[in-house]
Amino acid sequence: MGKDEYAYVLEYLPFGLPDSKDRKAEAIILTDSLGLLLVALKKDVAVEAGAKVYIGENKREEVHHIIQRTTPDKLNGNGMQMLTEKINSIVTENEEKYIGIINKLGSVNVRLHSLSLIPGVGKKMVQKILDERNKGEFKSYSDFDERVGFASGIARSIAERIEEELENRDKYKIFT
Image (cartoon, rainbow, N blue to C red; front, side):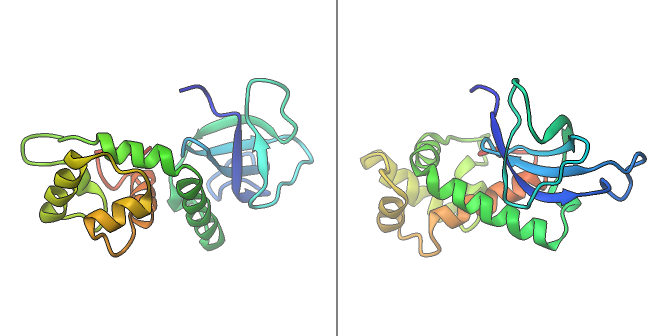
């Protein structure tokens, strides 16, 4: 997979993070590959939450440089809401990618299957998913939900898991 070219602004910080020493404009952004980054903005540049910004190798209009990876705890309430919305839209727009991941997930070790890391999936559900997957790969979220009987919706659970992974709540990563 190549580097991300674009990202979405989750939160604009006109004076940087509260613990920032130089007090210059920064933003927290989410890349298409689900990287959460803190970036320094160019002088006299302000960005709106939700804006799409270029972060590739060529000339950038808004972003001066990437400072570091960050975690959701640096976001305020509006930033967290924007993160949830962006993750949901990425999961919705990339259905084929995420169903492909579900179709390929295997065991982490002899006691733990990767599928059980997804919210709402317990041991019995893992077995049901594996049984259905053996009959044929899942084609879509709705195909998965119908065949497995996943009432809460797999897309919603995938988005929830992505948020957990960004928060580093678990040492295992499936989607990020």
